[in-house]
Amino acid sequence: RGVRLKGYEMSLKRSNRLFEDRWELKNLLPKNIVKNETLNVFGLRADYMEAFRDYLEEEGVETDEEKYTEVIIPVKNNEISHELKTIGLKDDAPLFKQTVILDTKKIASPRNLVELDLYPKLQSIQAIKKDTGSFEKKEWHLTEGHLAFLDMKSLLFEVERHKNMNSWSNLTINLESILSKLLEHDWYAIYAPNNSFCKNPHDWLERQIVTQNEVVLPLVKKLLERWYSEERESHYAKYREYQRLVTTDKNFVAEHKVMIEKSRLDLIERLQSIKDDIDTLDDDFIINPASGLLVYSKHLYKSLVYINQKNDYIKIVPVALNDGEERFVKKLREFTTNNKERIGTRAIYLLRNQSKGNGIGFFEANNFHPDFMLWIIDGERQTIAFFDPKGIYNMSGIHDPKISFSNEIKTIERDLGDNTIRLESFIISSTKKQSLLWGDDINSEEFDNNNVYFTQDNEYLDKIMKKLGV
Image 1 (cartoon, helix red, strand yellow):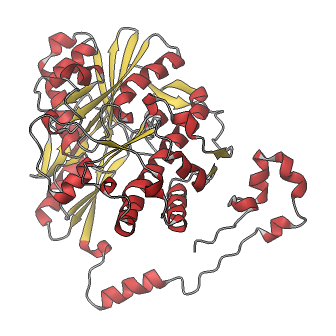
Image 2 (cartoon, helix red, strand yellow; image 1 turned 180 degrees about the vertical axis):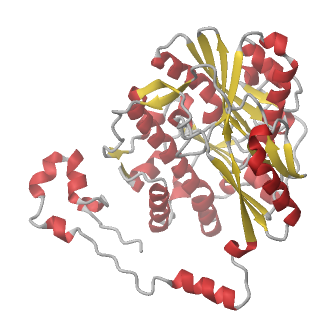
Image 3 (cartoon, one colour; image 1 turned 180 degrees about the horizontal axis):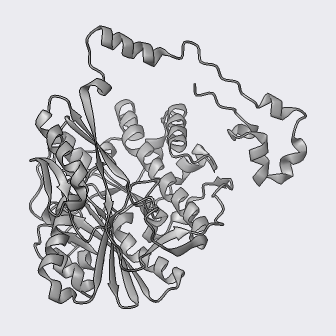
C-alpha cells in the first residue's frame, strides 16, 4: 500500500504524464522505461480487516453493520415551473494539469492578504476572559529567529502530505523559497496576543516547536491553498457558463439513507411508516426532538433531513442539515408563507448545495461551497443568491475569503455576461456580533455592505429580501 514512483526530478509522475507538459524532455526518455514504471502490487494476507471483523463477532462485540438498521427515505422532486440557471463548466473545459510553481508575488495585494488568527485558539486553550471594552488585535510577523531552528524535514513532510491530501499533483513545492517569503511581510498577517509564541523567540526549544506546529505550518498551508486555488481559478474561469438546471444535477439526491441503532425501535417504526407516503407529506415530520424531515414547498425536492444536536444513534447520508441550516430554511419558509402579497408574481426556489465534489464551489473563496442556492424569478430576470448559515467566530475577519466573496461574485456575474441574471452571496452568522474579536472599527454598515447578517436580528431575512428586490 502507498507505493509511489519517484518519477523524473521527484515529480511523482510516470514519463508519459510528465512529458505531456514538458515536451523538451522527451528526448531524455529511456528505452523501455514504461515497463520499468509498471508497478505490480500484491497484498500479503490482505484479508486482515475481514479477519478482524470475524474476531470481533467471536468475542461478542457488535460491528456497525450489526448495530444499526438502515431505513431508506425516498426523495420526491417538486415541480419546477421556470427554467432555472446554474453555473457550470463548458463540456470542452480542459483539466488543470500544467505544472505550476509557487510565486507569492501573485498574492501580495491587500485583497488577498493571507491571515492567521490565533486569538480564538489561544483563548480556547487558555480560557482567557474576553475584555468587554475596546479591543484591537495585535499583528505579528515572523523573524529570522523564529525560522532559524525549524525541523525542515518534518515540515516538508507535513507540507507534502497536505499537498497530496488535496490532490495537488501538479504543484511543485520549494520549501526554502516559501520560508524566505515568510520574512517578507506584505502578503500575510498573524494575529496573536502578547503572551503568545512571539513573546520570547529565543527560548528556542519549546518556542520553535510551537512556532513550527502552530504558526509556520498553518501559515504555509494557507499560502498554498490560497495560491493554488487562485491559479486553478485563472484556468477554469475562462470556461464558466450558465447552464439550465436539470434534475440529474448532482445537487439533487435520490434518497436519504438513515442508519438507526436497532434498540431504537420506536424511531425505526416511525420512519418505516412514513417512507411509503413521502408524496403526501405536507408538514414537518418529527423523528425525535433532535431530528426530523423538514418540508418546504419552495425547495426543489422533498424532504430535507435535519439533526440539530449530536447523537450517536442516528446517522444520515447525505449529511443532514445542522442546526443553523435548519433554522435558515424555517426562517425562509416563514417569510414566503407570510409575505405572499409582497412576493406577488415572483417565483422563489431553494436548493441545498452539496459539499465538495458534487455541489457548486468557487475557487475565488478557497473552494467555497455555500450551503444553499436561492432563485428569485421576476419576469425574464432571475437572481441567484448563495447563502451560507454558519458560525463566523473562527473566521479571519471582514476580509475572510468567504465574506469578501460577496464582492468577488459580482466579477463572476460580469464575466458571464448575461444581464438578465444577477448573482449574490450572503453569510448568515449564528455568532453574535458582540462576540467577534475583529476590532471596534467594523460597524453594522460594513457588515451590511459585505452581505453578513446575524440571526440574532429577527429582521435579517426581511433586510436581505429588500436588498434582493423583493
